[in-house]
Length: 312
Ligand code: TYM
Image (cartoon, rainbow, N blue to C red; front, side, top):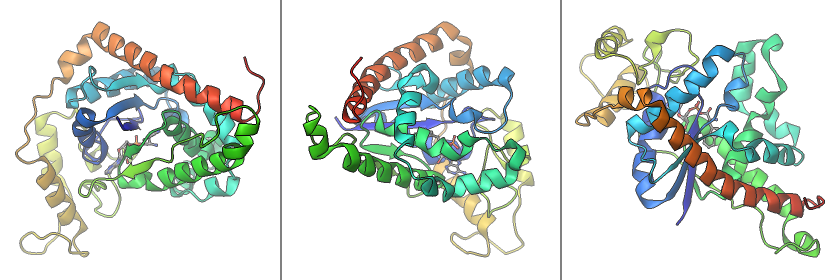
């Protein structure tokens, strides 16, 4: 079976963009592929955050995955920091990552500009190397993400090829390895619609967990009346009627796209039930981490060997 991995950061609340751009698509994929879905808590510390909130946000995000229809008997659901190999491989990969590649990342430029120098830690720059590690550890074939992660995926592919070139092939064989490539080069899966859900207050920026105004996004846990209010108050325009794809009407286009994707799909959201059963949630995350570690450790062992380390 081909393998799929993806994840969401436990920062702020999971919103409609995360759902339509990523999680919704995972639901179908879990029936056809071997899937691993993680909560990327290590990525969530790359900007200043509240230590009192992190573990709660991590559990909430796991509960949202399950409430959206991720089936723990099919997919491995786990917390990134529970599988040690992610950070370990990141260090190895970072030695093969040119700084210039990281400096070019649009998200780094945007986030560091917004955060200001004082708040920009090294981890914000090396963030894509951790993301590459999340993906390459599992020898993933496909990575379903929204449009904004495209550049990070491209870096992951280039990094996989670079490590394969530097340490794989003939060189690796001489060191006693089995030759061939160390990492599979993954493909992004970006949905044709919903890959970029825009803000409710500005049709030119994407819906985002970190935008200061909660009015700009629909959170998956917002009550019905709050959502209705946000939609009533969202930015529109003064053109008559509705139309898709008019560049002068980004808000209209966004609302129509969202409507197209969510209409006729009422789902019993069983979030509360799942979330309050903490023993169940813990057992899902523990089993997920166990299965993920098996695959991740095998890859990591190969990389250490290929890079010439003394065997443990
Ligand atoms: P994150 O947590 O910002 O977003 C999670 C997923 O939601 C998608 N997304 C959107 N899609 C459409 N419209 C929007 N407005 C919108 N906002 C977010 C994102 O593209 C993403 O698919 N670095 C990643 C998390 C990550 C990851 C990984 C993903 C870490 N390691 C390995 C895949 C594989 C991030 O911060 O996503």
